[in-house]
Image (cartoon, rainbow, N blue to C red; front, side, top):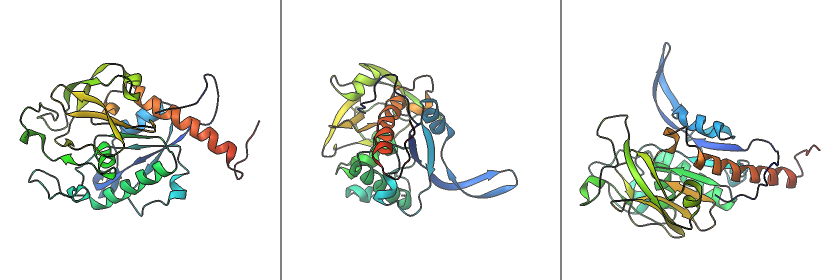
Length: 258
């Protein structure tokens, strides 16, 4: 993600939106529906210098409302509805969460309209690809030659080596190669219009891609699970800080203090 922030410039911490999802939760004496998101996402963004606002998948935000954010992390989660890319469901594809799909699709479209920097992770990367007209492999084990990208043990991650593409924002941010933590049985099939592959595994699986303007960067792995390497989150927060500074100095309703 590209930023114009100069070294040493101060400003308010940027406001980063993180979509959540609904599920059943038990806490204290309660057992009821709740809005969820693993806390590592919040920790990663906060440590990188951002302020977090959690976005439950209720009525989609308007373009004007989304424009109040300085950056967005499209978070991981369940499978994307295959109807979004014109396919029927594979036997191993999870039951679609159409409310979340609709919320995040709208959120991303508005973000692009308002030039808001976006960092998309796993499911988030797949949402972005479908918005751009791309498709997904619904179950990687069906494909000959593809390695393990999903750990065999529940709630664990497979380690995958990713090679980045020279000249891309992904490569400039994390270097030529990196070992990452993956847990995905689905992946990018046909890449959407306006997207460029910026990283791949040895088996050819697309593990990273970005837009030409570098305002959206997507990875198939889970960088939030490696809190000692926040380079991708820092890149988002830096770009979002630039937006926050521009927004507060051009919005006549915002008081700018010397």
